[in-house]
Each structure stands twice: as C-alpha cells, then as structure tokens.
Amino acid sequence: MENNNNEHWSRTRKLMFTTLGIWFVFSYVVHWFGNALNNIYFLGFPLGFYMAAQGSLFIFVVLIFWMVNRQNKIDEEFGVHEMHETESNKEN
Image (cartoon, rainbow, N blue to C red):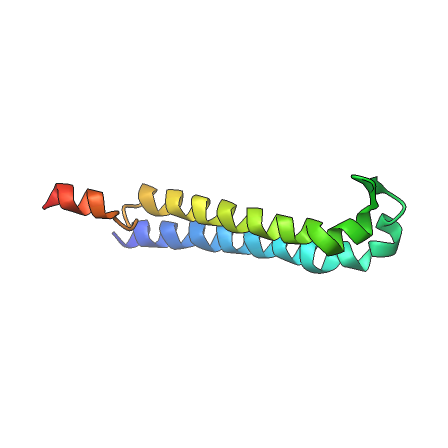
C-alpha cells in the first residue's frame, strides 16, 4: 500500500511540474520574446501580439482540461478516483 501511495504521489507531482512548466513558458517566456515573435505572423496577426491577446489564454484553458484529464486517469489507475453518483448507486 505504501509503494502504491508513493507511486501515485510521484506521478501526480510529475504532472504538476509539467503543468507548471508549460504555464511558465506561456506566461513569461513567450512574452519576454514578444518583439522577436512579432516578426512571425499567425492568423494575420504578429505572433507576439496574438500570444498576449489570445494565444496564451487559449493555451491555459487547454492546459486545465489536459491536466484534469491526466490526473483523473492517474487517480483511476491507483483506485483513488472520485465516484460519480451513478457508480456509487450501483455499489449500494
């Protein structure tokens, strides 16, 4: 049981640091290079401007759904997931 908990925590921690790394890149790194990115055009807009206006926000929303999906899979694999109401009714 102890190894199972340690493995669950290890995978959860890895997911958390991956998510924070992606968040950091699109929160800070992309904007630090905004002037250089403005030489590239995406959907008709300079990429630096687009990332500041919409791109980073879009990435954050996708990142949230991706992280929740990955965490749910990890939780289900280790048997610590939340039961939906229909699942709990089946067991009773």
